[in-house]
Image (cartoon, rainbow, N blue to C red; front, side, top):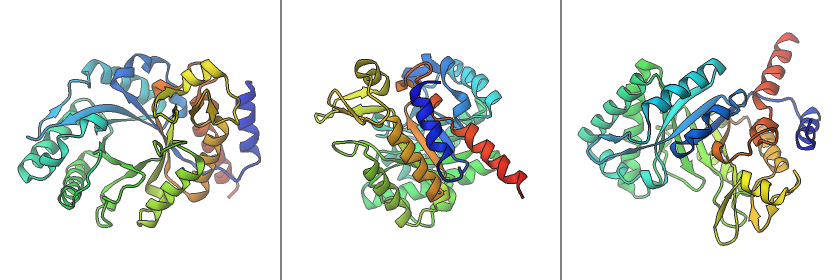
Length: 311
């Protein structure tokens, strides 16, 4: 057993009883080549990133290759991992505003997305509109969510929404239509993803009335320096070999194993729905992988079984 894994296991053995958490990982289309080696045993959900909405309600699916989705299905389903499709994200959110503002284009978008999920036997969709800001955009976002979830229900598709840590664009009456809300608790200045800032992010959403059971805490698999330059977790580990207790190496602020452990423990204590990793292609390959060093599903399933047997 590696020292890093031993450290984490010792922490778990002395911590509070574990709560079963959802463990979600994003896989961008430009990292599809790593799909054969991903730690599916550590995941409950995988979100394939990303397709782009267009203003007329059509969707640019060009980066969601049918062959890629088919192979992902063969890899995830035997492991009990749900497979979702992300719509939007960083540079792929431009079409949301005009599309969502009009009933006819919303209807077309919903029809196109639902058909795609059915065709490729996916489990749901993740809306990643970065970001609705004006009053009209926020109102349109609520309508889109309500209408989309209504269309999803006959097919048992899940609907998640990925939000900024500072976001205030989900109304209380909309929350019941969302299965999970994923908070991007990173890219928050320097350091960009400290434990303290992540806790503030989650508490901010809890204070907005979002049930803890629907909140997912975003965890970064990358670091940034004070200039904002990013390096993957794998690059930082390979270049500097920092210890598990370190969150700074070579000028790059990141989350070491100890900080990730603290964040996961907070999620357990608060009764959050789970954690989300951006993104799986940035992890270290092999035994030092973050996901492989955090045996989440195995530990939580064992604890759940133990608690059940003790009743």
